[in-house]
Amino acid sequence: MSGRGLHGVMAEYAESDKLLAAAKSARTLGYRALDAYAPFPVDGLDEALALPDSPMPLIILVGGLAGCATGYGLQYWASVLSYPLNSGGRPLNSWPAFIPVTFELTILFASLAAAFGMVLINGLPLPYHPVFNVPRFSLASKSRFFLVLEARDPLFEAAAARAFLKGSGAEEVYDVPE
Image 1: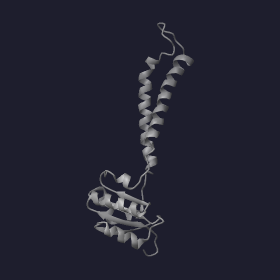
Image 2: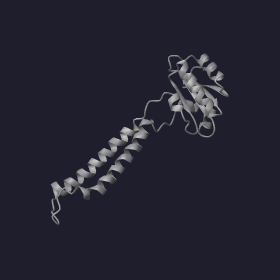
Image 3: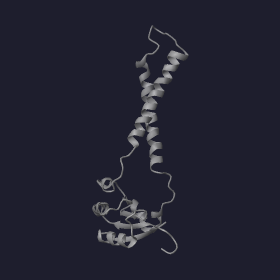
Image 4: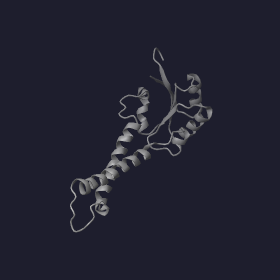
């Protein structure tokens, strides 16, 4: 790489099974900074990459609880505190009447939390990533599978990474410039 840094080394695979086996082998060898790209979800790949659990369920739960509290609180404030109107002898805090709006706001806030949480956690928008410098990477959304061993890994040595990826059944191995 003349004058430019190296982001890592990328291997291209034709089959998801080879990608999964290579990712497991890389983790076994001690690589920790690696990433995989596939045109569809590959069962077991997240375990092979040792990805952490997603915080999305917690984010959605908090969003839903906030929506529930907002819906109920708004109706309580309007019916009990701000404009108490006793019609037909019903109690001011008539929770069964509050259920539809509370439910709807729970769903609304949870879905908004899911959308915004996904965008933030995935780091979107991401207009540039070093893997885009490899011309064949465009096939990651069509028919090919890619595994990247990143240079930030303490175990990374470019020649050894290339040799390992070639030996793992990769069709091609590419250097990924920064």
